[in-house]
Length: 127
Image (cartoon, rainbow, N blue to C red; front, side, top):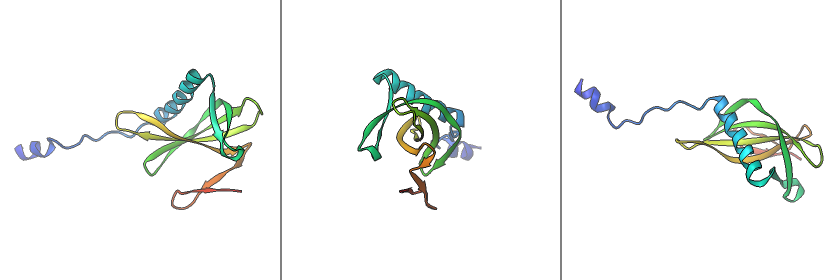
């Protein structure tokens, strides 16, 4: 019994994976904080020379996943200036103490994908 106790002491505790709802809430919170701090949620559009698009959240997708070290989910958003429907991908890191959005990318513009992933989860730009 002493051996079993000794083996447990100092062993890292197993931590549960974050739930899908926790990941979606992290994304909603990230968007809300940007809106509060900046007056709007904006994202630079690489195809438009970094022009900032001002977007409003329609919904966070139900599906969440994990690729490598990051969790991810998508959002549907509307561009307030053009009315374009945008699909954004959000990468979320689990720091051990918090969930944190670490990257945001425009995935689709009016339903047209800007990139896909290869068999090794590498991002592949589309024309």
